[in-house]
Image (cartoon, rainbow, N blue to C red; front, side, top):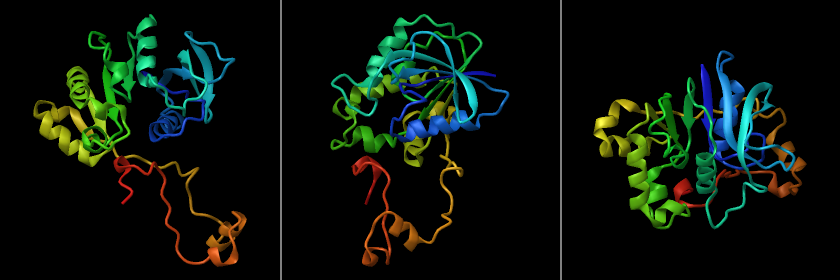
Length: 234
């Protein structure tokens, strides 16, 4: 299988985010009989863009096609990166025949309706929390009607749609009953080469982090994610 991932990130970069972690794990653990390609962006000033280059991630070789340069992926800009990436992608003349196309955002998929390749999409958000909630920091919460118009358009030509949120799964099955056989739940995994039981006791770990004696005892509450309603910290 020849599979092309299309997403506005640098797979070799340092962007912080769940989608980026998901895609890096996908590349790292993809079966060897899948030929991987990645159309994204580059944050390395010396990396050529708008042509295919051979790269490696986690020991896995794949082809990379950056369509634009972005010095700092973690910095938000007036025009969202997803929009600029979509415009740059549109301007590139790439042959997609014979490939399976793998999207992880709606925006880059909008121009692929007439591309005959199999297409599937992963939605990484709890849509009602991030789009319909007025206090969300997500751009689309300002114009949710346009987001859902875009969503209906893209969903209509996807061969399969996955969501990592049970809430979004229930929402989609209610909103798109005709597409129920194409919408599935995809539980997220964990890379056990990164996350595993610690060898040292907790007190020793806390000491290594520089905490005082009285701070090394008792319980800790840890939270990984933005302190925003969309991440449900409460």
